[in-house]
Amino acid sequence: SAWMQFLLANRSFSMWEGLYFISPASLFFLFVASACLEFQDMVDKDAWGMVKGQPHLFALAGCLGFFTNLCSLGVIKAAGSLTLKVLSMSRSVLLILYGMAVYHDVVTVVEAIGYGIVLVGFFWYNFAKIAQKEQEAKEKEALEKEPLLASNEEK
Image 1 (cartoon, helix red, strand yellow):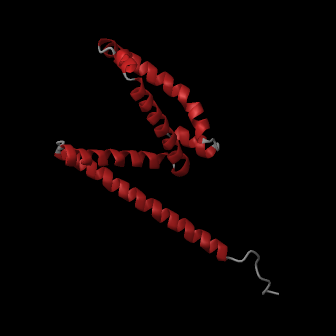
Image 2: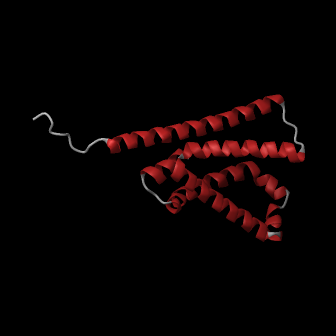
Image 3: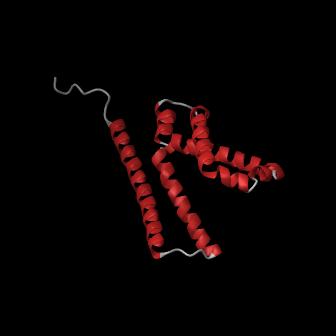
């Protein structure tokens, strides 16, 4: 995602251009990984038959994946890749908490401590970003109050 931030922010690419440049590499590496790790399992379970049986669900999943990637690029462009990572980790923790509350998923003490650390880090990151924006606003306000030209009182 740092590469995407470089393309989107530093090179002023649009989100569509970012997808254009990253999609071929993503397709290649995901295809190679799935061919090496999942091909035999897909053949054994007749995965292609499942796709042919319910193509609308697979098309919907593909569309949702596309829009998820597009939204991720929007977050990277607007706020940076670190923000995307922090949001992703926080989302994962919230999904786990939801699973614990609704589906009664069991979480070990070590996992709970890890999730707590992630949430504390998320709140600390947000606090730091807010403080940084406030500091930038104060500096901008101070610059606006300074006169453009020095006065000629010394003469």
